[in-house]
Image (cartoon, each protein chain N blue to C red):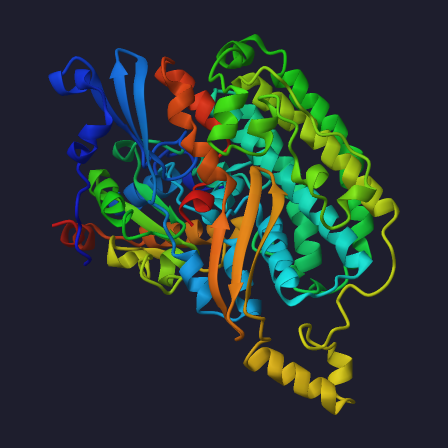
Length: 409
Length: 164
Protein backbone atom coordinates (compact mmCIF):
# COMPACT_ATOMS: atom_id res chain seq x y z
CA UNK A 1 0.00 0.00 0.00
CA UNK A 2 1.34 3.38 -0.96
CA UNK A 3 1.92 6.10 1.57
CA UNK A 4 -1.24 8.17 1.93
CA UNK A 5 -0.70 11.82 2.73
CA UNK A 6 -3.28 14.50 3.17
CA UNK A 7 -2.88 17.90 1.51
CA UNK A 8 -3.54 20.65 3.99
CA UNK A 9 -5.79 23.64 3.39
CA UNK A 10 -3.65 25.71 5.79
CA UNK A 11 -0.90 26.11 3.20
CA UNK A 12 -3.15 28.32 1.10
CA UNK A 13 -3.75 30.84 3.89
CA UNK A 14 -1.40 33.42 2.36
CA UNK A 15 -3.47 33.51 -0.80
CA UNK A 16 -6.77 34.50 0.81
CA UNK A 17 -7.90 37.82 2.29
CA UNK A 18 -7.45 38.85 5.89
CA UNK A 19 -11.13 38.40 6.54
CA UNK A 20 -10.63 34.68 6.16
CA UNK A 21 -8.04 34.63 8.94
CA UNK A 22 -10.42 36.28 11.40
CA UNK A 23 -13.16 33.85 10.46
CA UNK A 24 -15.40 36.44 8.83
CA UNK A 25 -15.33 34.59 5.53
CA UNK A 26 -15.34 30.86 5.06
CA UNK A 27 -12.90 28.67 3.19
CA UNK A 28 -14.57 25.97 1.16
CA UNK A 29 -12.93 23.21 -0.78
CA UNK A 30 -14.51 22.45 -4.16
CA UNK A 31 -13.05 19.34 -5.71
CA UNK A 32 -10.93 17.47 -6.65
CA UNK A 33 -13.91 15.14 -6.77
CA UNK A 34 -16.75 17.36 -7.84
CA UNK A 35 -19.11 16.71 -10.76
CA UNK A 36 -18.88 20.21 -12.19
CA UNK A 37 -15.14 20.80 -12.08
CA UNK A 38 -14.87 18.79 -15.34
CA UNK A 39 -12.12 16.56 -14.08
CA UNK A 40 -9.91 16.61 -11.05
CA UNK A 41 -9.55 20.31 -10.44
CA UNK A 42 -9.57 21.57 -6.88
CA UNK A 43 -10.80 25.07 -6.18
CA UNK A 44 -10.25 26.64 -2.79
CA UNK A 45 -13.03 29.15 -2.41
CA UNK A 46 -13.22 31.98 0.08
CA UNK A 47 -16.88 32.68 0.59
CA UNK A 48 -18.78 35.56 2.11
CA UNK A 49 -22.10 33.80 2.47
CA UNK A 50 -22.78 32.58 -1.06
CA UNK A 51 -20.51 35.12 -2.71
CA UNK A 52 -17.08 34.14 -3.94
CA UNK A 53 -14.43 36.50 -2.54
CA UNK A 54 -11.40 34.57 -3.72
CA UNK A 55 -10.91 31.51 -5.83
CA UNK A 56 -7.62 29.63 -5.86
CA UNK A 57 -7.32 26.83 -8.39
CA UNK A 58 -5.10 23.95 -7.29
CA UNK A 59 -3.94 21.92 -10.24
CA UNK A 60 -1.69 18.92 -10.66
CA UNK A 61 -4.09 16.14 -9.68
CA UNK A 62 -3.69 14.69 -13.15
CA UNK A 63 -0.01 15.40 -13.62
CA UNK A 64 1.18 12.63 -15.90
CA UNK A 65 4.74 13.57 -16.82
CA UNK A 66 3.87 13.50 -20.51
CA UNK A 67 6.59 15.95 -21.57
CA UNK A 68 9.29 13.96 -19.82
CA UNK A 69 7.94 10.66 -21.11
CA UNK A 70 8.02 11.97 -24.68
CA UNK A 71 11.71 12.80 -24.35
CA UNK A 72 12.50 9.15 -23.73
CA UNK A 73 10.82 8.00 -26.94
CA UNK A 74 11.66 8.36 -30.62
CA UNK A 75 9.78 10.94 -32.65
CA UNK A 76 7.30 8.38 -33.99
CA UNK A 77 6.62 6.75 -30.64
CA UNK A 78 6.27 10.00 -28.72
CA UNK A 79 3.18 10.81 -30.75
CA UNK A 80 1.16 8.26 -28.81
CA UNK A 81 1.52 10.44 -25.73
CA UNK A 82 -0.05 13.47 -27.40
CA UNK A 83 -3.39 11.69 -27.75
CA UNK A 84 -3.70 11.36 -24.03
CA UNK A 85 -2.85 14.98 -23.38
CA UNK A 86 -6.06 16.80 -24.14
CA UNK A 87 -8.36 13.84 -24.55
CA UNK A 88 -11.18 15.84 -26.11
CA UNK A 89 -8.96 16.92 -28.97
CA UNK A 90 -6.89 13.87 -29.85
CA UNK A 91 -6.65 14.54 -33.60
CA UNK A 92 -5.74 18.17 -32.94
CA UNK A 93 -2.95 17.17 -30.57
CA UNK A 94 -1.60 14.74 -33.13
CA UNK A 95 -1.68 17.48 -35.74
CA UNK A 96 0.08 19.94 -33.48
CA UNK A 97 2.88 17.51 -32.67
CA UNK A 98 3.22 16.18 -36.20
CA UNK A 99 3.41 19.70 -37.61
CA UNK A 100 6.20 20.46 -35.17
CA UNK A 101 8.14 17.36 -36.24
CA UNK A 102 7.58 18.14 -39.91
CA UNK A 103 8.84 21.66 -39.37
CA UNK A 104 11.88 20.40 -37.48
CA UNK A 105 12.98 17.89 -40.11
CA UNK A 106 11.55 19.81 -43.09
CA UNK A 107 9.16 17.16 -44.34
CA UNK A 108 6.55 17.66 -47.05
CA UNK A 109 2.89 16.64 -46.71
CA UNK A 110 0.81 15.62 -49.75
CA UNK A 111 -2.28 17.67 -50.54
CA UNK A 112 -4.67 14.79 -49.90
CA UNK A 113 -3.23 14.20 -46.45
CA UNK A 114 -3.57 17.90 -45.66
CA UNK A 115 -7.25 17.92 -46.64
CA UNK A 116 -7.92 14.74 -44.65
CA UNK A 117 -6.24 16.27 -41.63
CA UNK A 118 -8.43 19.35 -41.90
CA UNK A 119 -11.61 17.25 -42.14
CA UNK A 120 -10.70 15.12 -39.14
CA UNK A 121 -9.50 18.00 -36.98
CA UNK A 122 -12.69 19.93 -37.67
CA UNK A 123 -14.77 16.86 -36.81
CA UNK A 124 -12.79 16.65 -33.60
CA UNK A 125 -13.54 20.30 -32.89
CA UNK A 126 -17.25 19.57 -33.23
CA UNK A 127 -16.93 16.49 -30.97
CA UNK A 128 -15.11 18.51 -28.35
CA UNK A 129 -17.68 21.30 -28.38
CA UNK A 130 -20.44 18.67 -28.19
CA UNK A 131 -19.04 17.27 -24.97
CA UNK A 132 -18.72 20.81 -23.67
CA UNK A 133 -22.30 21.81 -24.50
CA UNK A 134 -23.58 18.47 -23.15
CA UNK A 135 -21.81 18.71 -19.81
CA UNK A 136 -22.58 22.40 -19.61
CA UNK A 137 -26.24 21.55 -19.89
CA UNK A 138 -25.77 18.88 -17.26
CA UNK A 139 -24.18 21.40 -14.90
CA UNK A 140 -27.11 23.75 -15.36
CA UNK A 141 -29.66 20.93 -14.94
CA UNK A 142 -30.53 20.41 -18.62
CA UNK A 143 -29.99 16.67 -18.58
CA UNK A 144 -31.39 16.03 -22.06
CA UNK A 145 -28.62 18.09 -23.67
CA UNK A 146 -26.08 15.57 -22.43
CA UNK A 147 -27.94 12.72 -24.08
CA UNK A 148 -28.44 14.54 -27.39
CA UNK A 149 -24.86 15.78 -27.62
CA UNK A 150 -23.39 12.37 -26.94
CA UNK A 151 -25.64 10.86 -29.60
CA UNK A 152 -24.06 13.10 -32.23
CA UNK A 153 -20.61 12.57 -30.81
CA UNK A 154 -20.96 8.84 -31.35
CA UNK A 155 -21.47 9.55 -35.04
CA UNK A 156 -18.12 11.35 -35.15
CA UNK A 157 -16.38 8.65 -33.16
CA UNK A 158 -17.70 6.09 -35.63
CA UNK A 159 -15.96 8.03 -38.41
CA UNK A 160 -12.73 8.03 -36.40
CA UNK A 161 -13.04 4.34 -35.82
CA UNK A 162 -13.59 3.84 -39.52
CA UNK A 163 -10.38 5.60 -40.48
CA UNK A 164 -8.09 4.62 -37.62
CA UNK A 165 -9.59 1.66 -35.77
CA UNK A 166 -9.86 3.56 -32.51
CA UNK A 167 -12.59 5.77 -31.11
CA UNK A 168 -10.57 8.26 -29.14
CA UNK A 169 -6.81 7.67 -29.15
CA UNK A 170 -6.45 7.56 -32.89
CA UNK A 171 -2.79 8.47 -33.66
CA UNK A 172 -4.00 8.61 -37.25
CA UNK A 173 -2.10 11.73 -38.27
CA UNK A 174 1.55 10.74 -38.65
CA UNK A 175 4.69 12.65 -39.60
CA UNK A 176 4.59 13.09 -43.38
CA UNK A 177 0.88 12.47 -43.83
CA UNK A 178 -1.63 10.12 -42.28
CA UNK A 179 -1.39 6.48 -41.28
CA UNK A 180 -3.14 5.16 -44.41
CA UNK A 181 -5.75 6.28 -46.90
CA UNK A 182 -9.33 6.50 -45.70
CA UNK A 183 -11.66 3.63 -46.62
CA UNK A 184 -14.30 4.11 -49.32
CA UNK A 185 -17.08 4.40 -46.72
CA UNK A 186 -15.47 7.51 -45.29
CA UNK A 187 -17.00 10.00 -47.68
CA UNK A 188 -20.53 8.71 -47.16
CA UNK A 189 -20.13 8.69 -43.39
CA UNK A 190 -18.98 12.30 -43.37
CA UNK A 191 -21.70 13.36 -45.83
CA UNK A 192 -24.32 11.73 -43.62
CA UNK A 193 -23.00 13.66 -40.69
CA UNK A 194 -23.00 16.90 -42.69
CA UNK A 195 -26.63 16.25 -43.59
CA UNK A 196 -27.96 15.50 -40.11
CA UNK A 197 -25.86 17.76 -37.93
CA UNK A 198 -27.12 21.25 -38.97
CA UNK A 199 -30.63 20.20 -37.92
CA UNK A 200 -29.28 19.00 -34.60
CA UNK A 201 -27.56 22.32 -33.95
CA UNK A 202 -30.88 24.05 -34.55
CA UNK A 203 -32.45 21.67 -32.04
CA UNK A 204 -29.83 22.54 -29.45
CA UNK A 205 -30.50 26.19 -30.04
CA UNK A 206 -34.22 25.64 -29.58
CA UNK A 207 -33.54 23.89 -26.30
CA UNK A 208 -30.97 26.28 -24.88
CA UNK A 209 -30.40 29.60 -26.64
CA UNK A 210 -33.73 31.19 -25.74
CA UNK A 211 -34.41 29.04 -22.70
CA UNK A 212 -35.09 31.55 -19.87
CA UNK A 213 -33.60 29.29 -17.20
CA UNK A 214 -30.42 28.83 -19.20
CA UNK A 215 -30.16 32.50 -20.19
CA UNK A 216 -30.71 33.70 -16.61
CA UNK A 217 -27.75 31.67 -15.46
CA UNK A 218 -25.47 32.96 -18.22
CA UNK A 219 -26.14 36.55 -19.26
CA UNK A 220 -23.95 39.11 -17.44
CA UNK A 221 -22.17 36.35 -15.56
CA UNK A 222 -18.42 35.96 -15.58
CA UNK A 223 -17.56 39.08 -17.54
CA UNK A 224 -14.13 38.81 -19.16
CA UNK A 225 -12.79 42.04 -20.63
CA UNK A 226 -10.64 42.18 -23.71
CA UNK A 227 -7.67 43.56 -21.76
CA UNK A 228 -7.82 40.93 -19.02
CA UNK A 229 -8.15 38.17 -21.59
CA UNK A 230 -5.11 39.39 -23.53
CA UNK A 231 -2.98 39.95 -20.44
CA UNK A 232 -3.63 36.41 -19.19
CA UNK A 233 -2.96 34.87 -22.59
CA UNK A 234 -6.49 33.55 -23.03
CA UNK A 235 -7.04 32.15 -26.52
CA UNK A 236 -9.68 30.35 -28.51
CA UNK A 237 -13.44 30.79 -28.23
CA UNK A 238 -13.06 32.51 -24.84
CA UNK A 239 -10.96 35.25 -26.39
CA UNK A 240 -13.25 35.58 -29.38
CA UNK A 241 -16.26 35.98 -27.08
CA UNK A 242 -14.46 38.96 -25.55
CA UNK A 243 -14.19 40.76 -28.86
CA UNK A 244 -10.73 39.83 -30.13
CA UNK A 245 -10.66 38.44 -33.63
CA UNK A 246 -7.82 35.97 -33.24
CA UNK A 247 -7.94 32.54 -34.75
CA UNK A 248 -4.75 30.82 -35.85
CA UNK A 249 -6.60 29.22 -38.74
CA UNK A 250 -7.04 32.73 -40.19
CA UNK A 251 -4.11 34.57 -38.65
CA UNK A 252 -1.41 32.03 -39.46
CA UNK A 253 -2.99 29.47 -41.76
CA UNK A 254 -1.62 25.95 -41.72
CA UNK A 255 -2.65 22.75 -43.52
CA UNK A 256 -4.21 24.80 -46.29
CA UNK A 257 -6.83 26.52 -44.16
CA UNK A 258 -6.38 29.60 -46.36
CA UNK A 259 -8.22 27.82 -49.23
CA UNK A 260 -11.40 27.38 -47.23
CA UNK A 261 -14.04 30.00 -46.89
CA UNK A 262 -15.24 30.32 -43.29
CA UNK A 263 -16.00 33.00 -40.72
CA UNK A 264 -14.56 33.39 -37.28
CA UNK A 265 -17.40 34.17 -34.88
CA UNK A 266 -16.52 37.16 -32.70
CA UNK A 267 -18.78 38.58 -30.01
CA UNK A 268 -18.12 41.62 -27.83
CA UNK A 269 -20.17 40.88 -24.71
CA UNK A 270 -17.50 38.77 -23.00
CA UNK A 271 -19.94 37.04 -20.65
CA UNK A 272 -20.72 33.36 -20.22
CA UNK A 273 -23.59 33.54 -22.69
CA UNK A 274 -21.31 34.99 -25.39
CA UNK A 275 -18.90 32.11 -24.88
CA UNK A 276 -21.78 29.73 -25.45
CA UNK A 277 -22.92 31.49 -28.62
CA UNK A 278 -19.42 31.50 -30.08
CA UNK A 279 -19.22 27.73 -29.73
CA UNK A 280 -22.63 27.16 -31.29
CA UNK A 281 -21.52 29.25 -34.27
CA UNK A 282 -18.25 27.32 -34.48
CA UNK A 283 -20.28 24.16 -35.05
CA UNK A 284 -21.65 25.70 -38.23
CA UNK A 285 -18.34 27.10 -39.41
CA UNK A 286 -16.59 23.77 -38.86
CA UNK A 287 -19.27 22.11 -40.95
CA UNK A 288 -18.59 24.60 -43.75
CA UNK A 289 -14.88 23.78 -43.67
CA UNK A 290 -15.52 20.03 -43.69
CA UNK A 291 -17.89 20.31 -46.62
CA UNK A 292 -15.46 22.37 -48.71
CA UNK A 293 -12.54 20.11 -47.87
CA UNK A 294 -14.55 17.02 -48.75
CA UNK A 295 -15.80 18.51 -52.04
CA UNK A 296 -12.31 19.22 -53.31
CA UNK A 297 -10.55 16.33 -51.64
CA UNK A 298 -7.66 15.69 -54.04
CA UNK A 299 -6.63 12.20 -55.08
CA UNK A 300 -3.08 11.02 -54.66
CA UNK A 301 -0.73 9.71 -52.01
CA UNK A 302 -1.46 10.31 -48.33
CA UNK A 303 2.12 9.97 -47.16
CA UNK A 304 5.28 11.73 -48.12
CA UNK A 305 7.65 9.89 -50.45
CA UNK A 306 10.62 10.88 -48.32
CA UNK A 307 11.74 7.45 -47.18
CA UNK A 308 14.17 8.86 -44.62
CA UNK A 309 11.23 9.81 -42.40
CA UNK A 310 8.19 7.90 -43.62
CA UNK A 311 8.17 4.09 -43.63
CA UNK A 312 7.72 2.48 -47.08
CA UNK A 313 4.48 0.64 -47.91
CA UNK A 314 4.37 -3.07 -47.16
CA UNK A 315 4.31 -4.01 -50.85
CA UNK A 316 7.70 -2.37 -51.47
CA UNK A 317 9.52 -4.15 -48.68
CA UNK A 318 9.46 -7.53 -50.41
CA UNK A 319 10.96 -6.27 -53.66
CA UNK A 320 13.30 -3.47 -52.71
CA UNK A 321 16.38 -3.91 -50.55
CA UNK A 322 16.53 -0.18 -49.94
CA UNK A 323 12.95 -0.11 -48.64
CA UNK A 324 13.70 -2.96 -46.29
CA UNK A 325 16.66 -1.05 -44.87
CA UNK A 326 14.58 2.10 -44.46
CA UNK A 327 11.84 0.16 -42.76
CA UNK A 328 14.30 -1.50 -40.39
CA UNK A 329 16.10 1.73 -39.57
CA UNK A 330 12.89 3.68 -38.98
CA UNK A 331 11.35 1.18 -36.62
CA UNK A 332 14.47 0.26 -34.69
CA UNK A 333 16.22 3.57 -34.16
CA UNK A 334 13.88 6.17 -35.65
CA UNK A 335 14.90 9.17 -37.71
CA UNK A 336 17.37 11.80 -36.51
CA UNK A 337 16.33 15.43 -36.28
CA UNK A 338 18.74 18.36 -36.60
CA UNK A 339 20.00 20.30 -33.63
CA UNK A 340 17.45 23.03 -33.73
CA UNK A 341 14.42 24.27 -31.85
CA UNK A 342 11.08 25.21 -33.30
CA UNK A 343 7.63 26.28 -32.16
CA UNK A 344 4.50 25.41 -34.03
CA UNK A 345 0.92 26.06 -33.02
CA UNK A 346 -2.56 25.05 -34.08
CA UNK A 347 -6.01 26.27 -33.14
CA UNK A 348 -7.44 23.62 -30.86
CA UNK A 349 -11.10 23.75 -29.71
CA UNK A 350 -9.81 25.52 -26.60
CA UNK A 351 -7.31 27.90 -28.15
CA UNK A 352 -3.70 28.02 -29.20
CA UNK A 353 -2.08 24.64 -28.72
CA UNK A 354 1.63 25.16 -29.19
CA UNK A 355 4.41 22.65 -29.35
CA UNK A 356 8.01 23.62 -28.65
CA UNK A 357 10.36 20.97 -29.90
CA UNK A 358 14.11 20.84 -29.58
CA UNK A 359 16.16 18.30 -31.48
CA UNK A 360 19.72 17.32 -30.59
CA UNK A 361 20.75 15.47 -33.72
CA UNK A 362 19.53 12.12 -32.41
CA UNK A 363 16.32 10.17 -32.92
CA UNK A 364 14.76 11.38 -29.66
CA UNK A 365 13.64 14.92 -28.86
CA UNK A 366 15.90 16.76 -26.47
CA UNK A 367 13.06 18.80 -25.03
CA UNK A 368 9.35 19.10 -25.62
CA UNK A 369 7.30 21.80 -24.06
CA UNK A 370 3.62 22.31 -24.59
CA UNK A 371 1.75 25.57 -24.57
CA UNK A 372 -1.68 24.27 -23.68
CA UNK A 373 -4.70 26.53 -23.99
CA UNK A 374 -6.60 25.25 -20.95
CA UNK A 375 -3.79 26.30 -18.62
CA UNK A 376 -3.96 29.95 -19.64
CA UNK A 377 -7.74 29.90 -19.79
CA UNK A 378 -7.98 28.55 -16.26
CA UNK A 379 -5.56 31.16 -14.93
CA UNK A 380 -8.10 33.87 -15.68
CA UNK A 381 -10.84 32.13 -13.64
CA UNK A 382 -10.04 33.79 -10.26
CA UNK A 383 -10.38 37.18 -11.97
CA UNK A 384 -13.79 36.58 -13.46
CA UNK A 385 -15.57 34.75 -10.65
CA UNK A 386 -15.01 37.37 -7.96
CA UNK A 387 -18.31 38.69 -6.64
CA UNK A 388 -20.42 35.94 -8.18
CA UNK A 389 -22.44 33.25 -6.43
CA UNK A 390 -21.07 29.73 -6.05
CA UNK A 391 -23.80 28.52 -8.39
CA UNK A 392 -22.53 30.93 -11.06
CA UNK A 393 -19.03 29.62 -10.62
CA UNK A 394 -20.25 26.32 -12.00
CA UNK A 395 -21.57 28.01 -15.14
CA UNK A 396 -18.39 30.07 -15.56
CA UNK A 397 -16.12 27.09 -15.09
CA UNK A 398 -18.09 25.19 -17.72
CA UNK A 399 -17.88 28.14 -20.10
CA UNK A 400 -14.09 28.45 -20.09
CA UNK A 401 -13.95 24.82 -21.23
CA UNK A 402 -10.97 23.36 -19.44
CA UNK A 403 -9.62 19.85 -19.83
CA UNK A 404 -7.50 18.80 -16.90
CA UNK A 405 -5.33 16.52 -18.99
CA UNK A 406 -4.42 19.59 -20.99
CA UNK A 407 -3.58 21.66 -17.90
CA UNK A 408 -1.62 19.16 -15.83
CA UNK A 409 -0.15 17.09 -18.70
CA UNK B 1 -43.71 -15.91 -18.45
CA UNK B 2 -40.84 -16.67 -16.14
CA UNK B 3 -41.45 -16.36 -12.47
CA UNK B 4 -45.28 -16.59 -12.59
CA UNK B 5 -45.14 -20.06 -14.18
CA UNK B 6 -42.71 -21.33 -11.62
CA UNK B 7 -44.78 -19.98 -8.76
CA UNK B 8 -47.95 -21.83 -9.82
CA UNK B 9 -50.95 -21.01 -7.64
CA UNK B 10 -49.09 -20.97 -4.38
CA UNK B 11 -47.51 -17.50 -4.71
CA UNK B 12 -44.43 -18.79 -2.95
CA UNK B 13 -40.88 -19.16 -4.20
CA UNK B 14 -38.08 -20.79 -2.27
CA UNK B 15 -34.60 -19.39 -2.36
CA UNK B 16 -31.81 -18.45 -0.02
CA UNK B 17 -31.37 -15.10 1.66
CA UNK B 18 -27.92 -14.79 0.11
CA UNK B 19 -29.34 -15.10 -3.39
CA UNK B 20 -31.97 -12.45 -2.77
CA UNK B 21 -29.50 -10.04 -1.20
CA UNK B 22 -26.95 -10.54 -3.97
CA UNK B 23 -29.63 -10.21 -6.64
CA UNK B 24 -30.79 -6.91 -5.21
CA UNK B 25 -27.23 -5.64 -4.92
CA UNK B 26 -26.45 -6.32 -8.56
CA UNK B 27 -29.57 -4.65 -9.86
CA UNK B 28 -29.26 -1.38 -8.00
CA UNK B 29 -25.59 -0.62 -7.95
CA UNK B 30 -24.88 3.08 -7.69
CA UNK B 31 -21.58 4.10 -9.24
CA UNK B 32 -19.80 7.20 -8.08
CA UNK B 33 -19.79 10.14 -10.50
CA UNK B 34 -16.05 10.42 -10.58
CA UNK B 35 -13.85 10.70 -13.62
CA UNK B 36 -10.14 11.23 -13.80
CA UNK B 37 -9.03 11.39 -17.42
CA UNK B 38 -9.78 10.06 -20.89
CA UNK B 39 -11.71 7.01 -19.66
CA UNK B 40 -14.18 9.29 -17.91
CA UNK B 41 -15.38 10.45 -21.32
CA UNK B 42 -16.00 6.85 -22.38
CA UNK B 43 -17.72 6.25 -19.04
CA UNK B 44 -19.99 9.19 -19.82
CA UNK B 45 -20.59 7.73 -23.28
CA UNK B 46 -21.57 4.44 -21.63
CA UNK B 47 -24.15 6.35 -19.62
CA UNK B 48 -25.48 8.25 -22.63
CA UNK B 49 -28.13 7.29 -25.14
CA UNK B 50 -26.20 4.92 -27.42
CA UNK B 51 -25.01 2.49 -24.74
CA UNK B 52 -27.38 3.27 -21.87
CA UNK B 53 -26.03 1.56 -18.76
CA UNK B 54 -29.41 1.98 -17.07
CA UNK B 55 -30.33 -1.31 -18.76
CA UNK B 56 -28.24 -2.91 -16.04
CA UNK B 57 -29.44 -0.76 -13.16
CA UNK B 58 -26.31 1.37 -13.29
CA UNK B 59 -27.64 4.74 -14.36
CA UNK B 60 -27.84 6.45 -11.00
CA UNK B 61 -24.44 8.12 -10.69
CA UNK B 62 -23.98 9.69 -7.29
CA UNK B 63 -21.66 12.64 -6.81
CA UNK B 64 -21.13 11.80 -3.16
CA UNK B 65 -19.09 8.76 -2.12
CA UNK B 66 -21.42 8.29 0.84
CA UNK B 67 -24.29 7.42 -1.47
CA UNK B 68 -22.45 5.13 -3.84
CA UNK B 69 -21.29 1.55 -3.66
CA UNK B 70 -19.22 1.21 -6.82
CA UNK B 71 -16.14 3.25 -7.67
CA UNK B 72 -15.16 3.25 -11.33
CA UNK B 73 -11.59 4.52 -11.42
CA UNK B 74 -11.70 5.99 -14.90
CA UNK B 75 -8.25 7.19 -15.83
CA UNK B 76 -4.69 7.57 -14.65
CA UNK B 77 -4.11 8.11 -10.94
CA UNK B 78 -1.29 10.51 -10.19
CA UNK B 79 0.75 10.53 -7.02
CA UNK B 80 -1.14 13.64 -5.94
CA UNK B 81 -4.53 12.08 -6.59
CA UNK B 82 -3.79 8.79 -4.78
CA UNK B 83 -4.56 10.00 -1.24
CA UNK B 84 -7.75 11.66 -2.44
CA UNK B 85 -8.83 8.45 -4.15
CA UNK B 86 -8.17 6.45 -1.00
CA UNK B 87 -10.14 8.93 1.06
CA UNK B 88 -13.08 8.71 -1.28
CA UNK B 89 -12.94 4.93 -1.08
CA UNK B 90 -12.86 5.04 2.71
CA UNK B 91 -15.92 7.28 2.72
CA UNK B 92 -18.00 4.82 0.75
CA UNK B 93 -20.31 2.66 2.85
CA UNK B 94 -19.89 -1.10 2.68
CA UNK B 95 -20.47 -3.22 0.68
CA UNK B 96 -18.36 -1.49 -1.93
CA UNK B 97 -16.64 -2.48 -5.13
CA UNK B 98 -14.01 -1.00 -7.41
CA UNK B 99 -13.62 -1.27 -11.16
CA UNK B 100 -10.25 -0.20 -12.57
CA UNK B 101 -11.27 1.14 -15.96
CA UNK B 102 -8.61 1.30 -18.63
CA UNK B 103 -4.94 0.45 -18.88
CA UNK B 104 -3.71 3.37 -16.78
CA UNK B 105 -5.86 2.43 -13.79
CA UNK B 106 -5.07 -1.26 -14.27
CA UNK B 107 -1.30 -1.20 -14.77
CA UNK B 108 -0.07 2.31 -15.55
CA UNK B 109 -0.71 1.93 -19.27
CA UNK B 110 1.63 3.89 -21.49
CA UNK B 111 2.75 6.05 -18.58
CA UNK B 112 5.59 4.22 -16.94
CA UNK B 113 6.99 7.22 -15.10
CA UNK B 114 7.41 9.07 -11.82
CA UNK B 115 3.99 10.65 -11.71
CA UNK B 116 1.52 7.81 -12.15
CA UNK B 117 0.58 4.87 -9.94
CA UNK B 118 1.36 1.69 -11.84
CA UNK B 119 -2.10 0.31 -11.23
CA UNK B 120 -4.71 1.64 -8.87
CA UNK B 121 -4.55 -1.55 -6.83
CA UNK B 122 -1.62 0.10 -5.07
CA UNK B 123 -4.18 2.39 -3.48
CA UNK B 124 -7.53 0.60 -3.29
CA UNK B 125 -8.53 -3.07 -3.66
CA UNK B 126 -9.82 -3.72 -7.17
CA UNK B 127 -12.53 -6.23 -8.11
CA UNK B 128 -12.55 -6.00 -11.89
CA UNK B 129 -9.95 -4.71 -14.34
CA UNK B 130 -11.14 -3.46 -17.70
CA UNK B 131 -8.51 -3.35 -20.44
CA UNK B 132 -8.35 -0.80 -23.22
CA UNK B 133 -6.99 2.68 -23.81
CA UNK B 134 -9.65 3.82 -23.35
CA UNK B 135 -11.98 0.80 -23.19
CA UNK B 136 -15.01 1.03 -25.44
CA UNK B 137 -18.31 1.55 -23.61
CA UNK B 138 -19.11 -2.08 -24.42
CA UNK B 139 -15.96 -3.13 -22.59
CA UNK B 140 -17.00 -1.15 -19.54
CA UNK B 141 -20.44 -2.75 -19.66
CA UNK B 142 -18.74 -6.13 -19.86
CA UNK B 143 -16.68 -5.19 -16.81
CA UNK B 144 -19.81 -4.20 -14.94
CA UNK B 145 -21.54 -7.47 -15.84
CA UNK B 146 -18.45 -9.38 -14.73
CA UNK B 147 -18.68 -7.60 -11.41
CA UNK B 148 -22.35 -8.55 -11.19
CA UNK B 149 -21.41 -12.20 -11.70
CA UNK B 150 -18.88 -11.85 -8.94
CA UNK B 151 -21.39 -10.29 -6.56
CA UNK B 152 -23.99 -12.96 -7.32
CA UNK B 153 -21.79 -15.74 -5.91
CA UNK B 154 -20.75 -13.78 -2.82
CA UNK B 155 -21.51 -15.62 0.44
CA UNK B 156 -22.21 -14.04 3.79
CA UNK B 157 -19.27 -15.89 5.26
CA UNK B 158 -16.77 -14.51 2.73
CA UNK B 159 -18.37 -11.15 2.95
CA UNK B 160 -18.01 -11.01 6.70
CA UNK B 161 -14.36 -11.92 6.44
CA UNK B 162 -13.66 -9.39 3.71
CA UNK B 163 -14.98 -6.48 5.75
CA UNK B 164 -13.94 -7.65 9.18
